[in-house]
Length: 120
View 1 (cartoon, rainbow, N blue to C red):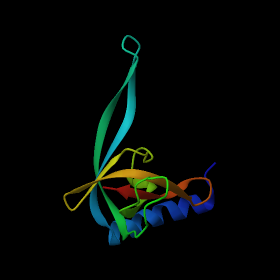
View 2 (view 1 turned 180 degrees about the horizontal axis):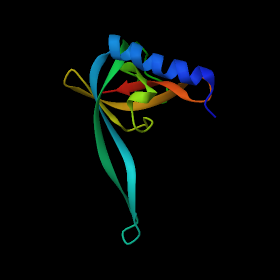
View 3 (view 1 turned 135 degrees about the horizontal axis):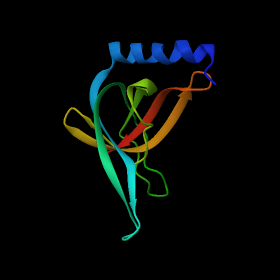
């Protein structure tokens, strides 16, 4: 159920990021069909140019060997047709990054922004 805060904060987050953000190219890999004959899932790529707030991240490598984050971006939820997922691609100034982490920030019952961790 949409709350009064959702009606205000979601559009406000999008307006703020549209005004002060940087244009990025976001490629979302969404599941489209399952081929029962081969047992594979075919995915389609959906490209979108959206605005994002870009932050430099200085996280060291983990002891498990997992890659450390290169950048973190904040995207308004209303800017994307589907939620970001790990493995999606982001291009910032001709450099391609992979989505490694996604955290949702809620304005009430709905997501207002996505905080997306990126690796090269």
